[in-house]
Length: 166
Image (tube, rainbow, N blue to C red; front, side):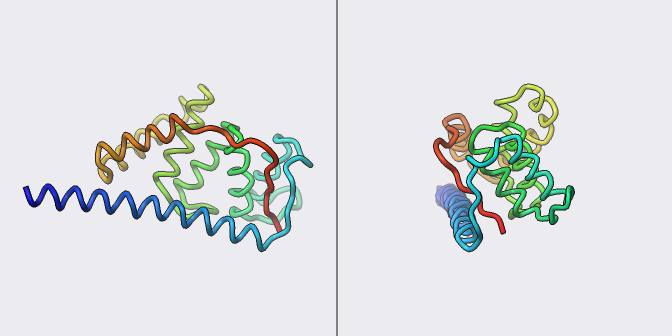
């Protein structure tokens, strides 16, 4: 009985640490954004922003290569329910490219991309399954159900969004 209580405490503590990590990551992004100049998404179409994110990611079209700037643009579009950007952001979290590696956020964004785009769903099925298995090994069933609820209840952002770039 005592070991079950200890195990539950460890799982709860692990979940709290993961949530604090997500919060800290978001706060770091906000702080970083305040240090850079502002570009308003109203000045560019989502397609143009997506292309700009790809330019930063790949360092093409006379654009400096910056995975961090690409992730920022992909995140802005992902929050507005752009499935291609959700897919790219999920892959960036999966690999730790331009963002800190985070399986939970990778699973979130890949799941949302899959939910929003059936063509992407087929392409990312194996990645999502592997991430889910990793999360299953590290989270309790209750915590895993909360993650699934979090994804199911997610809503795109509304209104004017600012993207921070140098």
